Length: 180
Image (cartoon, rainbow, N blue to C red):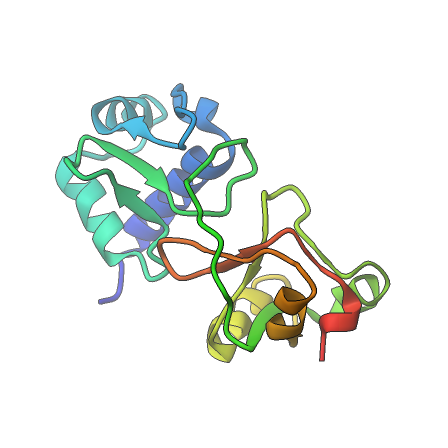
């Protein structure tokens, strides 16, 4: 289902608040990245965005990247991954598939060749099982380039992998020697 333009813009603001800058809505995330739904709605309204529980549930349900999730009783919400603020979303180590993909802009490839794929301000490097997902990610910053990561070799050499609730594969760093 296609999200409306207003839902996409509000979703971006929610992503900012729940992943990078909770103060933008005057809220505070707990250690696991959750915030009380009523507090989030109130803070988002104070920041000038039209939102209620129904709108929030629709954005969570229809977000094409499944960025957000509610706790079991629906009283709290958090982003599933991609945080630049320190939170522990309870990721468990997993064995990755043999190959994973990283989408980036063509202009960043030389830097990646020199330093590997770095997490930057985020807590983890993001990798995908699907080439098309990586292409979409890479196209956000210019002409996309898809890097194929030998995740099986990385894992065999002791690198840790995690899989977020929305299916994104995460690790701390991808040295260039694992890029095929």
